[in-house]
Image (tube, rainbow, N blue to C red; front, side):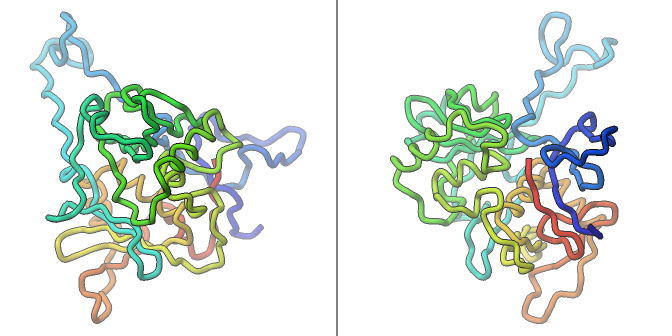
Length: 313
């Protein structure tokens, strides 16, 4: 109907729909004329093993099998280099903040084995790695977590859920008042086994945060879309400059924030520098730069002006 976009989902290219020869427009799958985003969510991304040399070691040969100098070892994960500092506001209230400034919540990461010593039932755990979506889980005790993985809520050992990534406890990123540890664990365990159309969350972060805070804003369609955009994602570009995006729902904002985490800080800054054209800041707002989406890139959910995007799996 006109320019209205009815559905938005994440697909691989092989899943792009073709016309149904019967002419029936089914409402339970991908549809013609609907906007799709081609990407991998965190549930489908697994770390790749390092290149193996002839003796089983890494980096002794070139990728095509020829002789050559050893490949450089992977650089250690440094949150300050790879992650984006940002804040989330609901109207004028800050509800989330990731900052590396002195006095802010520690964002150091640990091996899965060391992380176990820091977890208590009800804690939120985030596993991070370069070029991957961060993966969130709820620690429920006995070395286990509950997490949304590959379109299913699973109960796994923390070391298995990490898939080799480093992790940290992230109870302090969201500023909502948490439920009691027992309630958080019950929320998580009650959904173990839920999959696909039974799910009310699009990613592991939304599921884990809902378990801890119990707020409907983390669920798919948890907020009415009435044209206003009360949520703001403020990306810190430097000590003096920031870039702000506006969203209709927290769910949409989380999806964009996770995309930034996946592509990394350098890519985010380069994208903004190359494709976004800062407008002159308003008087009294010299530290904030508001920009428009780059050419060729669909507007981030919540930034649409002519098309409203309702996102589903």
